[in-house]
View (tube, rainbow, N blue to C red):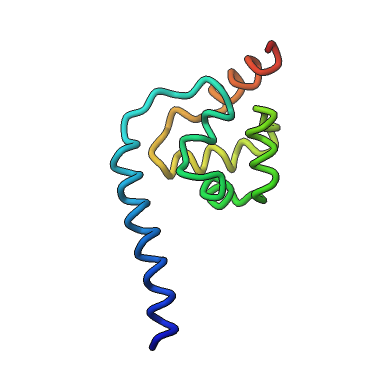
Length: 102
């Protein structure tokens, strides 16, 4: 039983943190960069988990402020699960174009 309580306490804390996060992130303006888009998640690890990508890859995406189009479907799916329907191919292409010009 003590092993079970060790498991449930962290799960409960993660759930409570997630609920608070979801309540505060309902109406947001679309970010102007890939790095800021990644920053909408509480942590890089949360974004990596949601997009099913390795943590180091996501960290690199944020550092270089660019995400290759091959990964966009995972980004869109994760954003849509958050209720951010504005994350679509056109939006991601605009971010990529802005980065290319910078």
